[in-house]
Amino acid sequence: GITVNSVFTLNVENCFITGFSYNGILMNSAGRLNVKGTDVTACLNGVQLQNITGAVEAAIDHCHLDGNSTGYTTDTTSPGGSTTTATYSTANNNSFGWVCGDSTSGKDVVNLEFCAGSENSFHGLIAASLSAQSAARYSNCIFANNGEYGVINAGSGIIQSRGNNTITGNGTASTNGTIGSFLPK
Image (cartoon, rainbow, N blue to C red):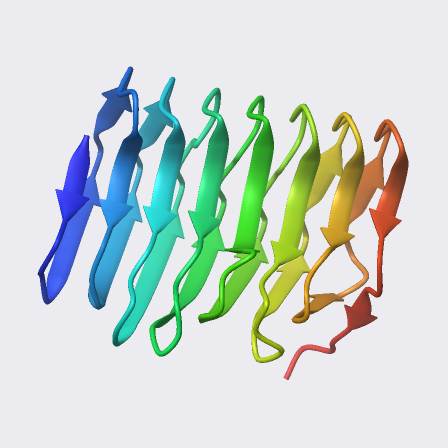
C-alpha cells in the first residue's frame, strides 16, 4: 500500500486501500501520520508504526481498519517510539484489533476515543510492549464478541480505561491483566 521511509508529515484522506500482502500503511520512520476517512482492508496490517529512531505521531480519525490480520499496530524499537490518537475508528473482523507494542522495546502510546475493536479472532485491544513507559488508554469504546479477550494487558506497559466503555460477549473474558483507570482532565 503506502510505505514511508522518510517524511515530515504524511496525510492520507478519503482513500480505500485493499488487498496488499503486507501493510496497507507502514510508517517506517519518525514523523507525523494523519489518516482520515480511510478504509484499509484485506492486508497483513491495516496500519503499522515501526520505527527505530525518533518519534511517530499518528492521528487516526473516522477510519475502518477491518478485515486485516491486524487492524492497527505500533511496534517501535527503542530509542524510537510512537503516540497515536484514534477517534471514531474501527479495527473489527481482524485477528487482532488494536495492538500497542508487539513485544517490542519502543515507548508506544495508543489513545482510543469512540473506537471499536470487535469481532476479532483474538483480542480487541492488546498492550504487549516490553517498555514500562508504554500505555494504551480507551474511552467510549466498544470491545465486543472477540474470540478471546476484549482488552488484554500482556506487556510491561499500562492499560487504562475511563470506565465508560462496552466490553461484552468476548470468548474467554472481558479483560485480562491489570487494567487501571483515568479521569478526564
